[in-house]
Structure formats: C-alpha cells, structure tokens
Length: 169
Image 1 (cartoon, rainbow, N blue to C red):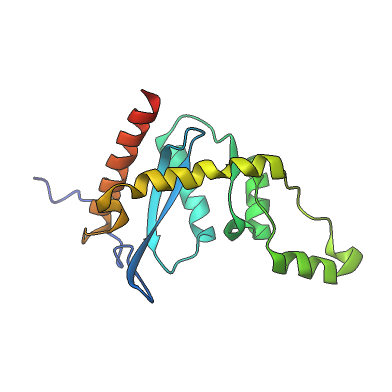
Image 2: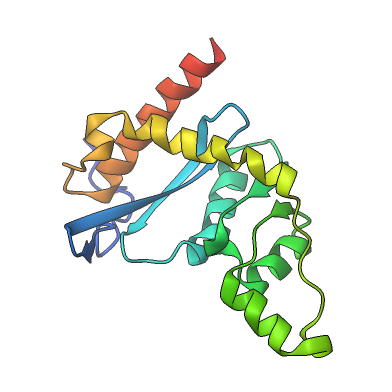
C-alpha cells in the first residue's frame, strides 16, 4: 500500500446539500451507443456549465478519439460556452433558454441572430439520458454509499466499463 502518491481528494468530496439531503452530480460524455466514456463528479448544487471544459480536458487526456458532436441541454446554452466550443472546433447542438430568446428579441435588430439549432440532431440527445439510466441501474451509483469521491468515481468508472463491454458484445 503506497499512501504517498494518493490522488488529491476534493475538499467537499463532491457532496452538496439539497432539500432531500446530500447529493452528488455525475457529469458524463457518452458515445452513440449510450455508453459513458468520460465522467467527473461535482457537488449536487453546482452548475453543469462550469464542468463542461474540465470534462473535455479529462476526455482528451484519457481518450485518443475526437469528439464528434456535443448534444447538450439548456444548462449549457450560455453564449460563452458556445464561443468556447466554436474556438475548440467542436460541433454542438444546444437549445437556447427561453430567457435568452426573450432578451435577444427585446434588443430587436441589435440582439443578433439566434444560434444555429438542428432539432433533428437534438432528437439523438436521448443517448445521453439512456447512458445515465444505465449507470443508475447500479444500486451503488444510484444511492451513493461511498464516503470519498474517489471511491464513488471508481464505482462509476467500473459500472461504465461493464456497460461499455455489454454494449459492444
């Protein structure tokens, strides 16, 4: 047992408070076969959008394949996120939030054009939800019993490996 080179555990252990108690949020990139490829954890009350770029960095560090297209929900629709995705040359399909639509329309011609959105492509976003559904079929993932975030992430990774193997065989 080597306790000198342990990975750094987050101060909050990816635990956050909500009305129902302690929560942890899993952020994941999935492939076209609904298999989770890259996963990160955050506290339950943390936003989704700030975790997108760390998720990409983790994906690039651990995978040789490029990202084909990002299909994301409205939580990722901030203009700075779209700008960053364009700079990284990542194609994306993200719907615009209703408050962003209203603000753009209120500005009139100064509001600019709406971002491109392919509703046909967005129909494939269910692969992300199905990937999370497969992860949550594991009792230890659905109800976090692990004290440490690294242990929980290890369980999530193990579940993802088994799911990946089942989908491919």
